[in-house]
Image 1 (cartoon, rainbow, N blue to C red):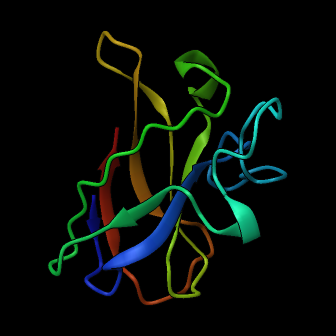
Image 2: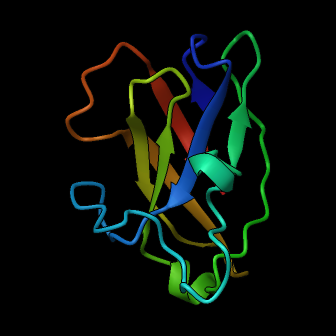
Length: 124
């Protein structure tokens, strides 16, 4: 994922309950409510954050158990928030990549985002 150099770190990610970037659904975070919140800890501090290089590239990796497997997460929007108060910046819809149950999404600017950050790429 290529992030604007202004996004060096501190942004956070989640899988939304919605199935498109134009409607990320209520919540908006997707989990089965049978466990503690996999996306945020105490005081609404994000558990899943990304780090980026000075050039804006990120190879951050996470393993998240939201109570659902790949099949249930397939088709849900993967969303990224910046760490600087600009809010929801990037979105892509997860889909099966290859012959494994690995999920991937082509990321694009979130609909309605009018901030100055530039983002392009994919997640898997």
